[in-house]
Length: 302
Image (cartoon, rainbow, N blue to C red; front, side):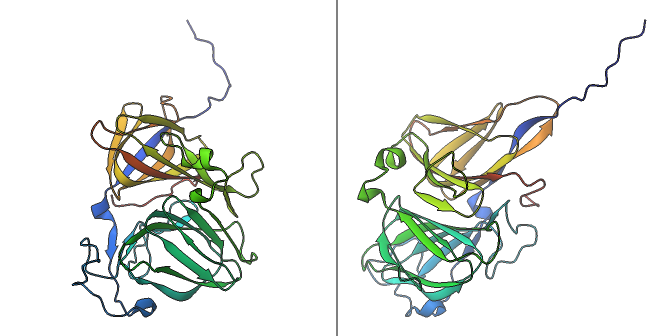
């Protein structure tokens, strides 16, 4: 007996692939203090943090500066993600950028920014700032505190087009405004979105189809996050530890770890929801960049 046939196309199904990037796979950079006009290191200074004797310690998630790796150039529209720690009374002297959307999230300490557009301000923990470098902008970034270190996550995102007019913006949760939306614990704080997306309103808007979400999870708390089939995401465990699960797949992330999230075709529909869970003994501080899917994106060799 012959079975009936059909010409109906079967829609492909997807599941989320998690690629864990442990911190020991990141490039650790400790450049000379002469870079950006800094004085010599002061390892005996009692106010310097013991995590490094250098003025700066950077963890590069992608190929950058002295770290050249053709197998790890970017992830979708993200070109650079640097996890920077700056010692007291040190910083990046005036330097230039062009044709890049630069998003900076402050983790600890105070970041003082000054640029050629006339902007000058200091931002603390939980703040986010952006620059549309466009046709060209010069700026400096300093830790002016003489006793406390500064840590921030700086991400460079490719703009939708070159030659944009330079622009600057920021969000400081200590100044009120969207506090309930952007400072609540155990919820996603949608801090950055596409300026062309009229469906959402966030404190910071950039010239690219990309979003920044942040959460601080208390011990034992969990939070879902959906990545649609035409999207992908990059996760950074900023502080503490978090388990990221999708169906039967999960990744345990510690401080400084990264994780690529990409939809891949599957014979089974495994869903597009991630579950972020903090353990019973440690809280979690997590950053997620969500963006348009680019097939084949991500590092190779890990």
